Image (tube, rainbow, N blue to C red; front, top):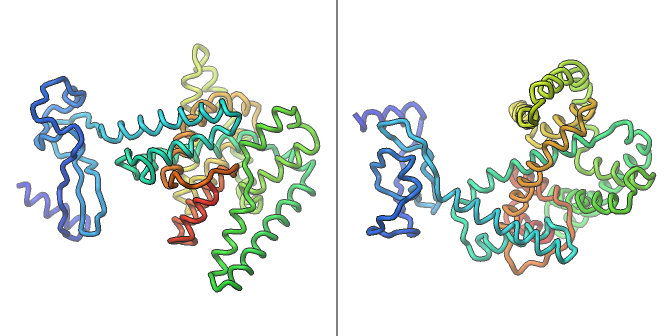
Length: 376
């Protein structure tokens, strides 16, 4: 029966049979250990007898984590190795952030350094890199969602001449110079253009923190700076294509829905907070399904709410979630960096752009790791 079910699964998925090896974890390999184990509470029938999630390795040394155990009973399955990895990353990011905050430096630099220490280039104590980085992608989503909540077309219009033209000229100048330099050096001009875009990115978190400390957010130079940062993160040509359609929803159904959540959450903000997160994830997922990106969708979700009078309340609700996942995201980026690399003040969204370019194969191989190290 099992063999027939396996053959049906292979045929149904149009899969290709390959030879793989089952790897037994070396961690916690104590056969005589009779102490209480957490997984005993949830795992009713473990036919494999393994204490941790087993892994498979193919002939190319790719490691795969078994995501769905076949069991006779419906059980709550835990990947204890992933939980352990997340604990390591979160605790190390916290320690790194505290250390850099005490030193008067940007805390996200501490997150990056902490990730590089526990990652493959350092102590190499994180096993499931792909799974940790996947969870950390929520940091990108909530970062851009919060940025969209603070987005104001009214304020941007005041300084649009300087912010838009200045931002465009800055980006175009970097793109042209780097593209020409790459061509003259025998490289790909497309990679040079991307390097120019990457170098034109600034640190939104550091700049905004500086403006707030100086009480210059609403000043003219503060608005010009914020407008330029917004233009760097999301090119307005792309955003404007969405605003016409989004403005209809944001002025009609969305305010009614958010006010309903507030009324239902009169005793606690839990329901409103959950609804805000769900709305962000739904728009981001829809954007990805339309062939755009999760990042653009999450930013668009924030822009939609920013047109209502509940933008500030929503931002207050999602800020703790954003801060947590942003720290996890930056620590996961740090895991790709070797400890010996120098750290500088950089734009955290440049990592988002670099990751997206790598996925689209615009930047490959040595250049990707060089840019990653240089930006860190």
